[in-house]
Length: 242
Image 1 (spheres, helix red, strand yellow):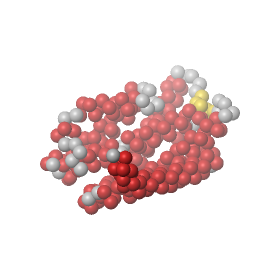
Image 2 (cartoon, one colour; image 1 turned 30 degrees about the horizontal axis):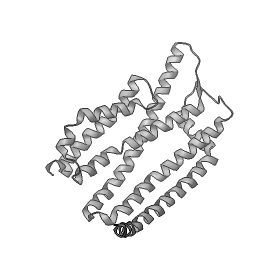
Image 3 (spheres, rainbow, N blue to C red; image 1 turned 90 degrees about the vertical axis):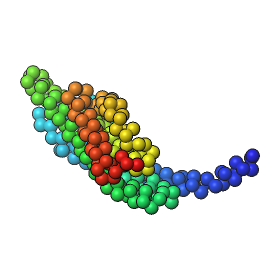
Image 4 (cartoon, helix red, strand yellow; image 1 turned 180 degrees about the horizontal axis):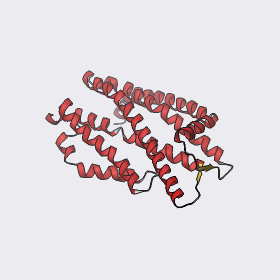
């Protein structure tokens, strides 16, 4: 029994070694890009504030240590954005030998769509946050109330919402792969609409915007993406026939 276990371990060792090498490479890239974001966070902060453009709102530091918080946030965001496509490439390269050529081609075709979905989700989350902040400013003006925003919390919430919406936008790719590889049936997935809508609503509820309108605006694209994914799988990929 012990001998068999050792022999099995030897069989898996090359795969574990390859995973270790790929993981170390990805971590090294993440560290390098994070260091760049850490030391050049001023430019990233300036760019974000320029894009948000909030005239009339006082954006301030509330603590001398916020410079450190901003530099760390900038480092993490830059590292994650750069490493996201790298992680996908590493996973695909590792799985390629175990996949059928048609399966691998399917994943390759979906890769550009995955990148576009991430970018679209990120941009959508960004502008939803901008909308919420602009609405806050307009209401404060109507009530003649002064407004001061903490720069660290402001940028952290914007980046967090944007990044999470970008990641959440990947689920059509996951659904398509599960359907294509017959891990789940089309009819089963279509029958779970209420459950999936609820998950989308709960996910949006945990994002920084706390008003009802933002909740609906963040939930709606996830629901639409799900329905479009089902429609495209039915009309183009014909996964409902599997």
